[in-house]
Length: 320
Ligand code: SF4
Ligand code: MG
Image (cartoon, rainbow, N blue to C red; front, top):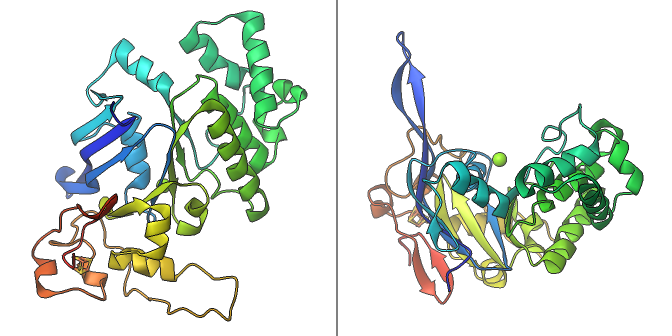
């Protein structure tokens, strides 16, 4: 029995052009040797600052972008080189929910056809059965029947994201990649949308890759959490272990920055120096070494491999 998804040493580089002749002068290493697995039915939270490559990783898995190297195994089968019909079949099984629901919905199309179109195109269903299915999906995501004949601009941000979720569900996917699905929404509606995703996960037996830029959003969503830094995995563990016993100095800093509701319970905030370096020309050795409060001499020389230091808890750091 394979994990539903296995990402092995994934690399996605973009060429950068420059100079008078616009020649390729190097690569942005957006995803640089990323590995992780997701078991069926679980939610893996993938966290990191903007530019760490988490969205590029999601897009490479679903083949909206082509990986430069490495493997993505879905149900044990490498999908990085598929094309034509076999790629279409996998695209049905893996769906994406985007950060900006408005930008991902066609403004000229009624909601009924936005959600119905994938059913028509991929599943070759027809007429009345599609409409019934769409109404059922609207109902499942908490929208009224008359949403069917409306346009995306007639809805609030939270409702638009519900439309995006209904569209993703229309193909009965096995895996949903949610790329910051609530970060464009008002705080007051964020938890409603997150709760909806959790309910739908139970009802449809979904597996989630849940991408977010901060640890507080993924906390209630995820079974396991992976922390990315400059294109690769710094640490990955069960949610509780990650929050209670973070090992990587970067994870420790992120956790120290989560506000605590009770001010009597004081904790030391770890302030990191500098910004995330550019993935064009990333630092040698450990990618975190220019900012790491615990860096040692070898850290600027040798890139640490991701290794399991406790059951299910992996970290890429020379301290372990
Ligand atoms: Fe810090 Fe070194 Fe560990 Fe990198 S390998 S996180 S620089 S201690
Ligand atoms: Mg992003």
